[in-house]
Image (cartoon, rainbow, N blue to C red; front, side, top):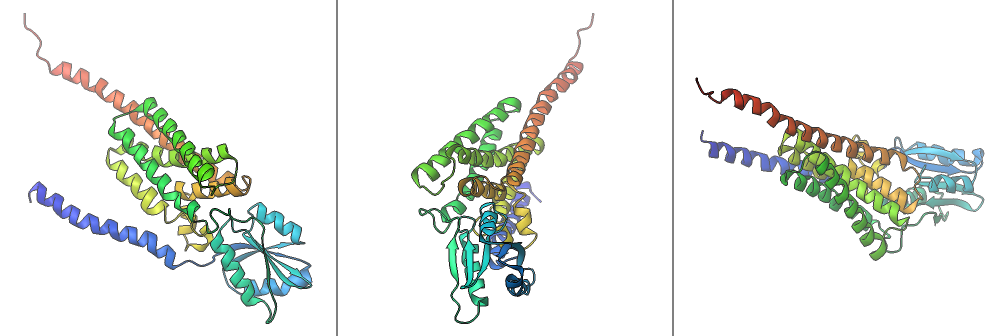
Length: 330
């Protein structure tokens, strides 16, 4: 079979396969959205909260119940991102505490679930403890930031590879480019659009680190396995990392293992870290920060190793070329 025919056949098979993978990655989690061990608090005297806790536990696997002594403790847990919301048992009826900044989708889901389980004729009072910013009440802008950052990272890693930058020079270029991405993104999302409300420089750092984690991974893969590494990195970060991130809803609303896997990839970890820094004063930022730092560090290490290998190859080839050069006789 001629080479052109083989390449055409491979393309005809590969393109539909990638299309099917993209459709599965984006559509399947969206059609299986439901609470799965969603952290929810119940506050009040044990005797009063026991019936409510049993009702919530009856929804097998939906909620992970955390018990608190009073409303103040429940509010503190929400602000610390230990739970997405809490039901406080009061003499006047149940009071629902939510945090739309953590996830507007979850806040709405909790309101519907608690209202449905409340006794007939009982009005459920809802208080948004940590509200989403007025400029982005549905969290659309925050969730929309995941894909552009992933694309920026893939583009950065690809450009470094195509420009044949290697070693320390490539690593420094990736770091500086990501820093500029972070500053530009914070200027747009915070200063201009007002959809982020936390510390400006912390947000810029998170946005830059998210871009670096993707870009360094792409460049590192390319440095180790060649240009095919760009495709592998793009597939991992864009086609899987973006829909598995859970930023548009919550990781606990995605089917397993997608919800957990997404938090181990830069788009998911970056979205979670940005939400913590922007709205919760950095609460629960440790795990996603470590995840992003690990991807960035391993990617930069791969870039450096690839540059070292590229320098050694010409050194090994020169003696071989010299050995093949005919020597003058006499």
